Picture (tube, one colour):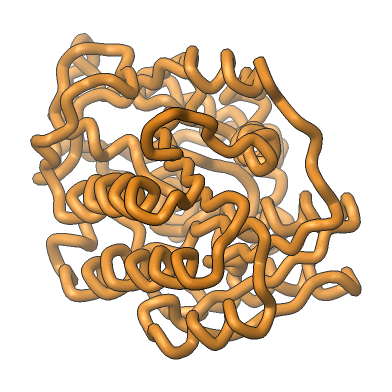
Length: 342
C-alpha cells in the first residue's frame, strides 16, 4: 500500500459538484481546508432543487468556488483551466442512468463523450498532477463471472451509458499514453445515501411509498435467482476517492489505471428492499411495507453487480465499512426529514 495523505495546498477541480458524489467529495475536501472549484450545469434530469440544496452545504466554505457551466462546452472548459490552473481534476459530471440512455442518447454523447474529451484536451494543454474520472460497473455488461475484476473482458456493454463509460476508459488511456497524463478511472457500484439521486431505485421506492404507488421490481418475482447488487454507501466511496487523489499511477507505460470501487459484498435486491422497509419504519415509528409488482428485467440492466476491490485495497487500503442496514437508516432518516413526510 502506498497511500499518501491529501495535499491541502493543491487546487482541486470537481466537475459535477452539485451531483451526489461530487457534492460529498467537495465537502470532504473543503472540511480539510482544500481549495475546491466546482462546476456543474445544473440540468433538470432530476429535481434541480436537490442540486441547489447540495450546493448550499458547500457555500459556507471560503475556499469553495462554484461555476455554472457545461463540460461539453469546450470554450468554457479551456477558459476555466486557463484561469484556475487546477492541480487535480475529479470528473464526476456525467449523464447518468442506464434506462434513460435508451430514451435520450444525445445527452450521453454530449456529456459523457464530448465533455470528457474536452477535459482530456484541457489536461493535455494545462498539465495536471492527476485526473480521476468516473467510470461505472456497467462496463462489465452481462458478464457472468463474479466478482468482477478489473482484468475482466469488458467489450460487450449492454447499454449506451455503459458504452460511453468504456469509451472514457479508452480515451483516458490514449491521452495518458500520448501526453503522460496521470489518470485513474473508478468503476462505481450502486452508490447510495442521503441526498442521493432520485432516479436510483431505492430513492424511487421511498417516493412511491409516500405517494401510495406500488414499486416495480424487475426480477420476474424469481426470488431464487434474484438480482444482486453491490450497494456502496456514499461515505465509503468518498474515502476511497480521497485516498487516491495524491496517489497517481506510477508505471513504465501509460500512467493510467482503473479500479473497482464498491462494497465487495453483494446483496439480493429483495434483501435491500426489506432493509429499506425496516429503515423507513424506524424513521416513521410504524411498520412499512411496500406494495410490490414484479416485471421482467429491463433492456440494459444486468442480473448481478459484484465488485472485487482487492486492487484498490492493496493500493490505498480501501475497505467499505457501512452495512446496508446502517446506510439505509441514514437515508431514511434524511428522507423523512427533508421531505417532511409522516
